[in-house]
Length: 171
Image 1: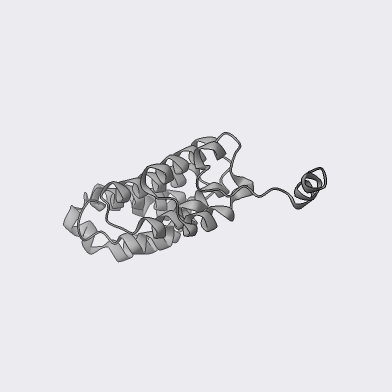
Image 2: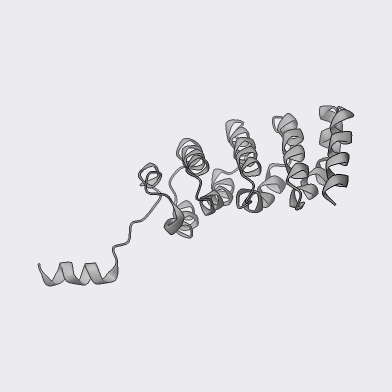
């Protein structure tokens, strides 16, 4: 129930958990990221942001939740998830390919701000690789035309087959 979830999240926050307590509760916090209530997810993300810089932060486990978070219909969830992901990259605590492939799901969104932020994170932290090209190719049709030029080294532009045949016929 939305009201109960909201009350619990407010109560949890009012307890002002320490970094150590948040680290100890990470498994429970991460499990809460699948909640259908955006208040719960946003509250959890704000608490995780407090410990993302610690050595105890579970980067890989978080990356498993990232595709669902980035494909959320709630913009604040997506934006907070992108912010947390960027903090992980800033601390260089994880294989960029793995996090980058999860990050590619941000292109499900048709929001220009979300796609631009995701593209900038990819450009800044993830080297062009076969894995990244494949991951982005799944969302190629969704990438907005103003964002596409930023990702040119990650996106293989495929000429439609018909155009290719016509082009060869005129040569």
